Image (cartoon, rainbow, N blue to C red; front, side, top):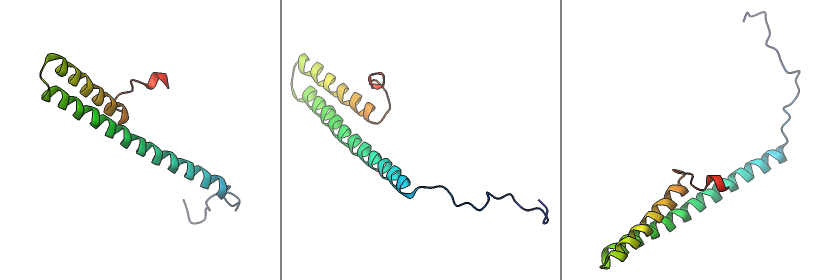
Length: 95
């Protein structure tokens, strides 16, 4: 661009942002992000409860039934953790 050429302008019009609509959009996005973070934390606590409870059930009680139930409960905890962290999408087709 030469010194003689001028850049095109938009005519000097102010940008068309509606401050109230922008605030509402940012507020809603922030609220959704905070709720999603809280829900993920709750799901991970629930998953930890199932994993450690299943391991405890499998290791402290004697018998095949305890080992099977403990393993199933632990696997359920791992599945909940995988869903909460979006590693898998097992329930994605039902949403």
